[in-house]
Amino acid sequence: MLRGEVLVIRRALNMQIKEDNVDQQRENIFHIRCHIQNKVCSMIIDRGSCANVASDTLVKKLNLSCIKHHRPYRLQWLNECGEVRVTKQVLIAFAIGKYSDEILCDVVPMHASHLLLRCPWQFDQKAIYDEFRNRFTIVKDGKTITLVPFSPKQVYDDQMKLKKECEDGKSENSREDNGERKPSDSTKPKLLIKPVKSGGKNRGVK
Image (cartoon, rainbow, N blue to C red; front, side, top):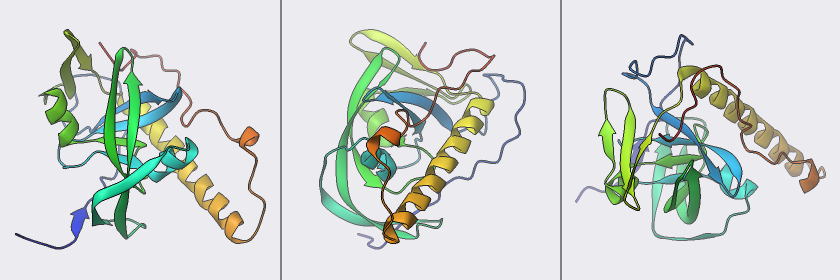
């Protein structure tokens, strides 16, 4: 059995906003929004990896309770985070439209999304993936549900908000390290990501 560090490449988003066409999903990662504790959060579904992941930012902002990971491991991000030791897990209850679920996630520093669903979610839900349209179809309580990805413009808007959230978090940590007072909870935004108005079709659950 091979042993060593797990190497993960975080995909970089480099897109040009153009007219939305649901059939032009060849190079797009599946991005969508979900609700967690009535907060709007960013989600990615990526079939290429073996663990569901929640960002440590999400866990901190929503004050979620974590448990010890039963099999801790080291993760190597190809970004400024470097090597990360994964020692905690969190149970996340989320909803996308009428679809709701609960999953156990590893907690790691992550800037691409608040929640990353991978092979375990697809396996457990027996999700069928449409590679051409970049959609997932599942059957929940006898009802067929199709998850539809965001348009490139909606993804871009979410990424800009996540980037700002990351920068704000670094500034806050820097102030705390310097002994400055932490802002009160009343000054914190209630939404992790504010809904973006778009002239195109609504995305999510069909």
